[in-house]
Length: 329
Image (cartoon, rainbow, N blue to C red; front, side):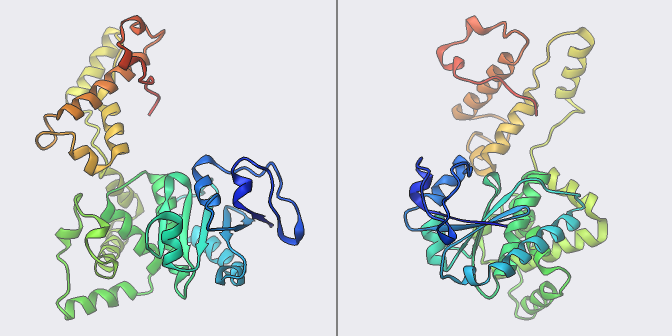
C-alpha cells in the first residue's frame, strides 16, 4: 500500500509537495488531466491511499483518515459484490474515491451539495464520510462500474440499480415501500420508469426505494442477462431491419462504400444525452431543428473523412475541415 500526500502546487506542473513521514512525492506519480481540478483545488490537501483497484483520497485529521482501513475494506467488498451482481468477471480501471467531511465540503469540491456523486467518465467517486458512508460509497461505485461496463442507461434504471446494489437483499427497500404505501406517499411507477424521469425531480427517499425494488423484481424474475438487455435498450435504437440495414446490404453487394450515418448519429445523441438531443428536433424525433441539422451534417462529414484515402478532402469547406473523421464504434 502506497500512501502519499499531495499538495495543490504539485499538481500545477511542479513536482513538489510533502509525503507522510516527510517522504517526497514521486515526480512520476501520474494525475489524469480530468482529475487535476480536484487535486489542485486550493481548499483541499489530499493524502492518497493506493490499494488494489482504488486510490482513496482523504485529508489529515478527518473521519476518513481515522477510518481509512475500514473504508479500504468497504470499497473492495463493494466492488466484488457489484461485479457479482452484474455477472461480470472483472473491472480494470482504477477508481479514484474522494472522501470529504460534509456536504458543504462536497459542494466546495464539486459544486453539488450531496452526500455522494459518481463521474464515470473520470473514474471518480465522491463520498461524504458519515455513519452511512458505506452505503453511499457502494451506491456511487455501482454507477461507476455499471455505466462503464454496460454503457449509460436511462436515469431511472441507473438509480434503481444502484439502490438495489446497496440493499443487498436486506429487505430495507421492501419495508420502505410498504411504509410509503401505508402512508399513501407511493409514487405511481409509470411516473418513475420512463425516459423523461430525472433524479432531481423527487427526493431520493421517495424515488429510490421504489426504483430499487422494481430493479430487484426484474433481476429476480428475469435474470441478469435480460436486465442488461433492458439497460442497453434504453439507448438510441440501432435499426438494422429497415432502411439503414437495407442500405448496408446493398452497399456490400455492390462493393460500394457505406456510410453508417444511423450509428454515427445515435452515438452523437447518446453523448449529448436526452435533454440536449430533444432540443435538436422541431417535432418528436423526426425533423431536426437547424442545430440538429448541423449535428447530422457533421456526422456525414466525419463519415466521408473516414473513407479510405479521404478522397473528398479537397472539396470540404473550412468548417468541415475542422470535423475529425469518424472512428470505429
